[in-house]
Length: 403
Image (cartoon, rainbow, N blue to C red):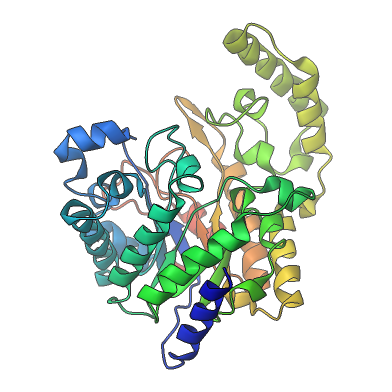
């Protein structure tokens, strides 16, 4: 992999005049509305007529509203599954042009854009994250290069490319002594992107779901390129942010009505939360692991108030160790599930969490993007045609629209 790192260094050195992107306050847009399978995408042309799906979900007026409320950028998740399924050729080129159109729409509204290649678990289907980091990696690296070439024609100070969202592996290397795979793989993808896009800022990450600890396990000298952002995601305290999430594991998927901050959980509240979670787990699985649920709630209550800012602190320590400016860090995701089906948590808990997480990043001088624009973790009401934020949400995110 040495040749890729050397190529990146040469290309970066050849373009010192390029303007690099600077970010402050952002929001993640949607990935899919209906979550089609790859076979459904391939068999129904209508699904991909407006690819990426954000073109169906977010209007120019909504982008203008985001800019007016104080956001300077969006992080735009893009599912690469259909591009990989079609392979190189005219159909893939059409989809890549769709990414360009979606990006330009946000640019026209005055927003900067992080184009985030964001695969999801799809089992054995092409384009699923497990296959991407496995047998399909060479095809994916080639795709990264083609997307980067398109982005390089856009303003370098307004568009960045994130080459892979939350690599889901290498936790054994981050937290143990297993040999890491991701650093060399990331260097290869970075080199493909840099060769195709000499001016574009490239967003890099650690493995193990993009955790701050995973970022801190990297040696940035492996990619000697100053025109990069180093991203991490922050969902701590996890039991609060992912309570009731059907895609998560037990016990958090069965827990609901757990307040934030942890110090707000009284003995009475803890007992009620545990009892309800035991009932849900028993109904879903036939029996409940009472001890597991009780321990999770007890551990949450024992967290210090600083737990919410741990990831920011860890990332800053790593950056300072390696001489990386804090402005080149990027908290690309943070948020909390507050609505699940017909259930909703008190908004004041959600706003308190947003305030604490956002303040930690602001105090450290780190740009951020909240997850997400709409939905169960959304910051904006879906019934508003322009999805304008409530004053309380603006205040939690430190946005001028609250004034």
